[in-house]
Amino acid sequence: MNANYKNSYKTTEKELVSLAVYNTGFQKCDPLYQWGPGIRDHYLIHHVISGKGCLKVKRKEYGLCAGDSFLIYPGTEASYTADAQEPWEYAWVGFNGSDAPIILKATDFTPGCPVIAATPYGEEIAHQMRHIYDVRGNDFESAVEMTGRLYTTLALYLKGAGHTPAQNNYHTYVQKAIEYIAAHYSYSITVEDIADYVGLSRSHLFRSFELVLQVSPKEYLTQFRIKQACYLLKHAGLSITAIANSVGFESSLYFSKAFKKAKGMSPREYKQKNFNQP
Image (cartoon, rainbow, N blue to C red; front, side, top):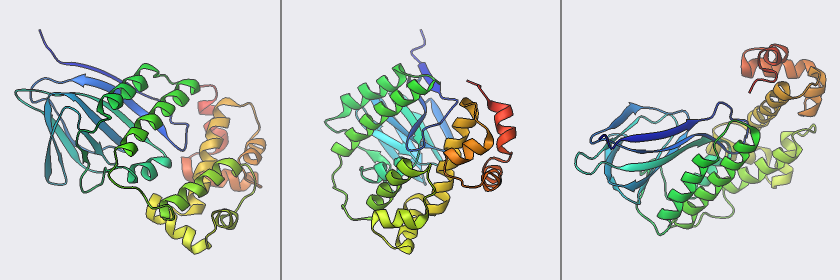
């Protein structure tokens, strides 16, 4: 009897901007089962439940066993292989969003060493990852619940971290700015308004965003508004002008230009293609 099994789930929508689950699952692998080499467009954490395996990334190899976790960063080529004698079983969750790099920088995962050895929270991490899979679904309620359980999972990695992030650093500034944007994006706020709220100069805020998220505050604000507009275009029977006003664009013409630049089609075309689609 083949001992290998795999249960996985991929979402079709990633509507939550701050943090969203892209895929989740668990698998008991055959001996020498391998994924890759390849890259992902999102963060992907694997937690080893039992057995052994090997991760290869950036010409380095890491041996892992039960209780260990590894993180694959977006755009980073990696491969991983189950042990020949004791093939591993693991759970995984793929995710992205503006909160992802900020939270992960507060864990012991780093691009130079994307592995965390077994911690006292290993069983709870596996338990929470299983919960993410159990509440899977493409409706908005399921997306919120999956994201909530993902936050809980990541909090366990924070608890096990061997360092405490400094309070007054770039990541704290960006997180505070993101919270302000999420609460005020529907108004005609500017980068100056965000900088004033955070308590930084515009140039310092720009540097913080570039270092943490690799985008400017203005780009992030526009992306956030476009993401919210996509949801309204799909699910709300509002005019283009009403949607533009609802997400903070004072001009429907400017909204249409920004939307087309981001999505490759006009808001009207996007609505015709996606309205009331699951």
